[in-house]
Image 1 (cartoon, each protein chain N blue to C red):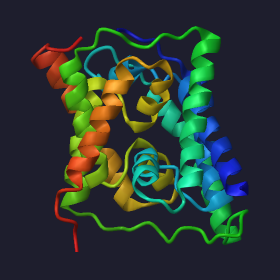
Image 2 (cartoon, each protein chain N blue to C red; image 1 turned 120 degrees about the vertical axis):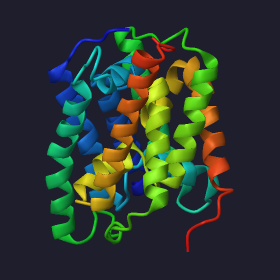
Image 3 (tube, chains in turn brown, cyan; image 1 turned 180 degrees about the horizontal axis):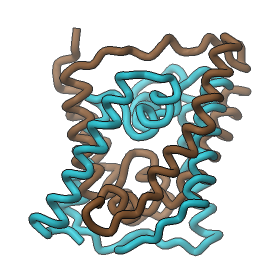
Length: 137
Length: 141
């Protein structure tokens, strides 16, 4: 139960952060990527603000060694840099650059209904398509 | 649509996102990667509760902000492009194992070289895509 409450709170903070920062506006995201045109650097500051908190926050948690609920912290992130990582990230970036939605803001926009619903349905379909690929050893 | 540079709200909202990621990591030992949380919530019975709670919290909080501030969604974006973009985002984040939040905020906070590479690649392909669609082909506004 405690885990669910923490996750609910974290999700709400995340959604609020996306909305306050303007990242739920896909045009703002597209304009960040449009360095040769209507460049809006806001997204860089969103990333910077997030890292300002999460870098020391994660370091403190690692120093403590476990988390508040007594679970172990996740194992150190994989360091494998392979074709899947590069190709997947490249395709994701193309989709991001077409419509201005990455998964978080797309879900946040479900609160509006509207175009986000179509985007999320297509996103789920794309994710299922990717499962058809053979998994790496 | 042109947008204004909003440094203060960007920084403030970013810090809330960082706080949310830290809370999930330090509180229950999980990574706030939205694509992963969504995929696992739909595909795995175990640990479904916290994932659904996180996603509902995210949508509800953003929705309250939209209502409170009278923010309307974008309209008129071509449906075909929207669907193609969704397919690519879903496909790419599954293959690349993460998106802006998982690689960008949590991965970098964990000082993961793999995530740094992912961020550089999707930022690069995103910038190239906007350049191509807006300035070379001029097919999207």
